[in-house]
Length: 320
Image 1 (cartoon, rainbow, N blue to C red):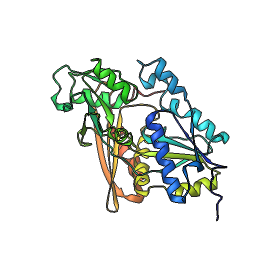
Image 2 (cartoon, one colour):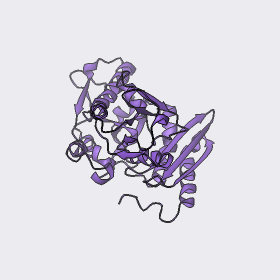
Image 3 (cartoon, rainbow, N blue to C red):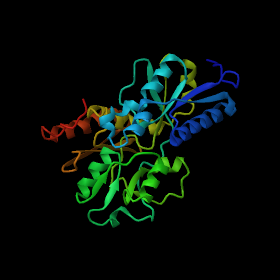
Image 4 (tube, rainbow, N blue to C red):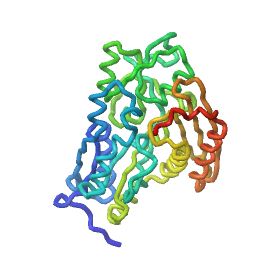
């Protein structure tokens, strides 16, 4: 089937949040689509959409995400505009995406995954292992908070949100001695000047889908489906099939202390998973492997084993 490609007169509209990282991801999507179909930048329009989460994060900066309404705070308005036809595709950080999409939308296109690791960020470049007893560390991630307290219960954890520049200012103001950011975000923003120490995924298992960009479309838009197929990264899709099935089986629809990472090894896919109590007092982990085509089933199996081992009250922290 021959499709009508977008043009400067009729551009394909790319919806995104307005943060520097969200825009960088939208620009990468535009670049890849332009290269795949030999189209100029003008054949695409970047549409910035303000979400409920953008406003509430600024107004209620000291509240954890789970108290503000969970991950959907950053996708609802974008998905509404996608369903209404105001935009043609939506670009998302996959670690921020709920496991279920609204009826009529599909999330099945992924760009090549970036570095999955977390980075410990300080003003002087020191390593996380060098922190003194009782040191103050800033993070807004319930996963990172739980993982840190499990390994270092002596640490003081403070709420720490905002873009990279905001977090660096907080470090300069002495709010905390260090914070954590995803290596992927720092790399995509080209922020080589930020002093950081990447942490091995063996020491700090990352969030599900960390480092991956997803592109959402309307289910009935065949032209967009064909265009997106040209830039979809198969290996990333295979890994996320396992990770997001694992997350869905754990009911990870809002921010919870869940970590998971799938890796490809020849024709096999390996998955590691970890669940924690929010205070870090208990951690359960599991792993498994399967043929790549059975990745989703593997995700469910690893989650099922964790659920079977978890005490009855382990999931009292779940969001409603």
